[in-house]
Length: 203
Image (tube, rainbow, N blue to C red; front, side, top):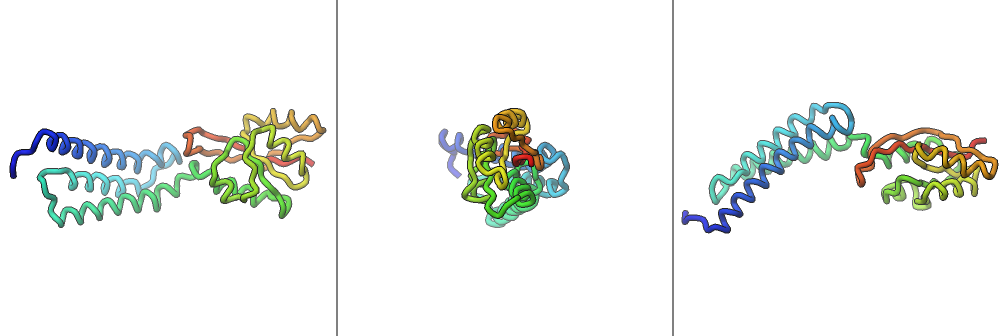
């Protein structure tokens, strides 16, 4: 019960501030992420946010020692928050999961068993692991060369805004690109919105 030293007081306030920021931040993410990214409200956000705020409230340092019962309650609330956030809310944010959507598109439009994808705007390592280790990460010029090298089987992924450039590159060989599908989403690494098209050489 001795008075706290100055550095201990600063540490106490830093801990309290951190708890407030993290608790409110988690609550905001639980509610705001589905609205901002998926343009929809998730009812799972409410219990997740309330559990985050409850955990922060109970963990707020009121005395030097925290009762064991309160520690258990904090752990339960934190567990509820993270299980709902990562088990239910995050998987529902379809726009940030571009790679699975690209894989579905490639599988649905694969012209040959030996088809290889070349990707210009999207260079996430997960694309290589999920679509195939032979996937080529390149630029628009590389996508055009890839399509021309195997016009019957090759697929290319390019930004929709680069479609005209892709066609210009292919037109030199008397070819054009056919957009098979468009995939819209968010590159979670950079935060940039992406609209990519899956292309093959038009017959």
